[in-house]
Amino acid sequence: MREQTSRSVVRLAAIAGLSAHLLSFSASPAGAQSATLLKPFQVAAREFSYSEDSKRPPEETAWIIARRSEGTHMVSFSVESPTNEKGYVVEIFDFVKLTYSFLEPFTESVSTYHHTAQEMAELDGEKPGCTPDELAIANAPSTPSFMLGYLVVPITTPESEAGAKWVAPALDCYPLRETQISRWGSHNEITVTAVAEGEPSAKFLTVPANYVERPPSQVDAEYWTKYNEHLFDDVRRRDQEYYSHRTQ
Image 1: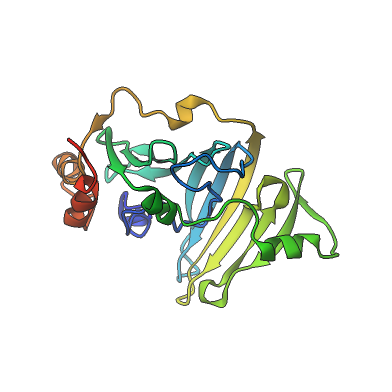
Image 2 (image 1 turned 30 degrees about the vertical axis):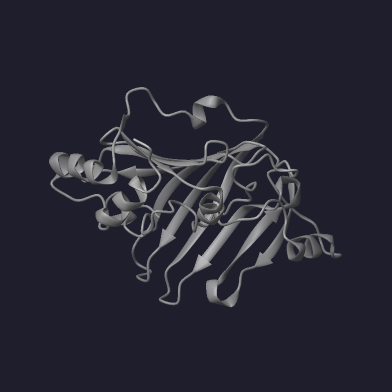
């Protein structure tokens, strides 16, 4: 749900951050130590977004994802400012502190949303590990296919979300490749290009010291001052969400 320049308006359409993006997560239940520990890793991926106009070149986005075994994870994706500066939006889903943090690179801002355990579970929107359907497909006899050294199995997404994904059972059925096709003819393709197993470095889940905590309305105001453009189109709703569980 990017909303960082014209290519990004859809990406941040909801306050939930990246809960609906193609690189879907399998996360632990929020606010508790889950009995199901996940495979910790860091991955890099590339996304190509094709418009309905076949003559237009695809837009490319770089992704970095880092996940801890208890479910806390970071997602970042490349963006450009209205003046063609390059940066990375970062989102941190912290299932220990029950917070979702949105880091905006061009204003060096962070907005930290506090949530209940139930809200965090709904925000992330995924269950831990492989689903029964994915396990059934993974265990069915078939010709093996591999990506980056991992066995992957193709999973067709529901008809309402046309597309497919190739999940790696050894990584809790994390998709190493995924496509999604809209009814208007546009489509996205995401491919993981590198995987490093193990608990990610704390730097991936730490807000830089130079970033300033700001509510969404102030982030938008800073962005407007710098570029004469709005960053968000739903500032009031974002502010309501931001202040809903804050104690100060």
